[in-house]
Each structure stands twice: as structure tokens, then as C-alpha cells.
Image (tube, rainbow, N blue to C red; front, side):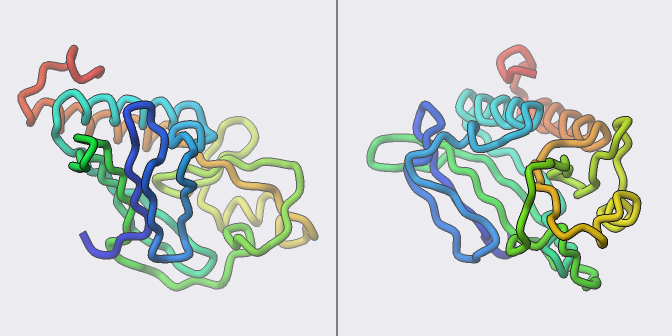
Length: 190
């Protein structure tokens, strides 16, 4: 994989025991529970399943996703695998950048420096689409226009989740990886 943006090592209770973030794009707190830091319940459950499968089989799982910044669309990856420490085998979660693509006009919605209000917008962790009223998922630029976010002084906070399309694709990819490893589905939690 290309560049590493975040690396966490988890103990048996999913507490972060080691973290590094060579870039300012990601952060993780040592001592915090990795899964509890994921606000979207479906995404949290997916990571719980992935971590459990890696612990059980010892085989890594890798997924690609978009990890946009205010000015770039980025193709990223998440790799969950085992890491050997003095205390034994631990789960390692690595998030990194495969390639930066498509420079765009700076989107304040994705800018960490912009003040935020109490309203929360759900954004898909994989494709970066935004969930609108009625459960519709649209690209960030369309959401900004439709919600008239250019006219707002205070923008909503973003919470990461997963759109139905990406959830199905990731689950299917996970099942393919499990099947390819020869691990029975019942043991992998699928």
C-alpha cells in the first residue's frame, strides 16, 4: 500500500494500545476503545465482525474506500490484520492513501477547521456520499447545494456511516475474502 495515514494496535478488548498518525488527516487516542470511536452503529458492527474474523483466522482483510479532504478526492484503504507484540498477537488497523485524485474547489463541509453546529449529517465512510432526508444518498457537492450549505454560517457536524450500496459491497467482499481463505462462514461470523 502507498502512504499510511493512521495505524492502531488493539488489545483483546479493542482498546487502542498503540497509535500513530504520520499525517494530520487522522487521529486516534491511546486508551480509547476503537469500536466506540465509530459513531455509526452499522459501521461499528461491520468493524466488529472484521476484527473478530481476523482474530479467529489470523488472516488480514483489506478494503478500499474514499477518504476525501476539503480539496481532494482520495482513494484510501483499510487493512485489518494481526501484529506481533511482546504481549502476543494483537489486531492492527491501518488506514492509508492509495492515490489522491481530482482536485476540486475547496468544500467547507469537509474542512475540519470550520465551526460546527449541533445538526449532524451522515456521510458514507466508503464513497463519501451524504445521507439526505428520506434516506437518499448523494455526492457531497450535490448535498451542499440541496441543503443550501453555502449560505449557512455554521455547518452541521459530520458523522460517518455507510450507505446501503457500500454496506452490501463490503459485506460481499468480506464473504469473498472469507471464502478464499477456506474459513467456514460460521466460524468467520458471516
